[in-house]
Length: 340
Ligand code: NAP
Image (cartoon, rainbow, N blue to C red; front, side, top):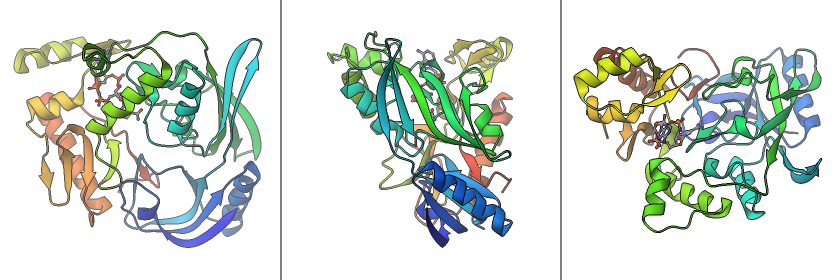
C-alpha cells in the first residue's frame, strides 16, 4: 500500500473538482485494502473507495478520511465446465477488460466498450449501454465486507441489480476486490440501438466483438466530451422511468416523445426532454454547461467548483420537474456520500 497525505480530489476525479483528502491509500492487492481499512480504523476515520473517479462529484471541502484508490490488477481467462470465464481485479480499467475479451473473439461485454471506470466500479451501478447490461454476464464479485472483515463472494442473485443500481451502491461497507464474468465463444451482434444500426446502414461490418467494440467507442467519442480537455463525469443523470399515463400526458403536450418499455413503465431519453422540450442543449451557467452533442452530459470548465456543479444540476432537475412533473435522479454520486 502506498500512502499519501493531503491529496487533492480534483486530481483523482474526472470532473476535476474537490478539496483534499486526508489520506489516499493506493491499493494494488487485497492485503493492501485490508491494510487501508485498518489504517482508517486506527485513526478513527471513515474510508471510501475510488477507482478512476469517473462517476463522482467530490466536495469542495474535501474528505476527512481515507480514500482507498483501487488499483488491484490482473485479468485471467479460464474455462469452467466448458464455459469461458474471465476474472479481473477491481482496479483494471473496464475498457481494458472489454478489449481483452474482444481480442480473443469472446462475446458478452462488447457493447459496454468505452464506458469509463474500473472493473470494481462496474457492478456498483450495473453499467449498461446499447442494450447490454453487466448483469447479463456477471457471475460473482469477491468482496471485502468491512463489517466482519471477511472476504465474501456476492453472486448475481445476491447483488440486487437494477437499472444503474446494485446493493454495492447502498452498502458502502462492501468493497469489491474483483469480479468474474461468463463470456461466450459463440454470440450474435446486438446492434438494435439506433447508433449502431446507423453504423451498419453506412456499410460497417459489425459482426465481431472487436468491430462492435470499436464502433461503440467511436460513437461514444462523438457523444461525450474529451476527458483530457474538459471536466466531466459522462451522463450526469439517469434516464427516467415513468408510467404509461405520464408518457401519454407528455406526448399530448410535446408531440412524439421517444419511449422504451421496461418492467415498471417506460424509459424516456432525458436528452430528448432537455433538448427538445426545454431547449437546454449547450445551456451554460458560468463554468458549468450541458454538452452540445449530448445534453445529458455535464461539462465543468477549469476552475469550476463542486458547489457550482451541484447548484447547476439542481437547477436542471427543477426545470425538468416544473415542465414535465418528472423527478430525475443523478447517476453521478457525491463523494463523500452526503448532500452538498
Ligand atoms: P441513447 O442511445 O440516446 O438512449 C437514450 C435512452 O433511450 C436510454 O435510456 C436508452 O436505454 C433508451 N434507448 C435508446 N434506444 C433504445 C432501444 N433500441 N431499446 C431500448 N432502449 C433504448 O443514450 P446515450 O445517452 O447516447 O447513451 C448511449 C448508451 O450508453 C445508452 O445505452 C446509455 O444507457 C449508455 N450509457 C451508460 C452509462 C453507464 O452505464 N454509466 C453512462 C452513459 C451512457 P438504456 O439506458 O437502457 O440503454
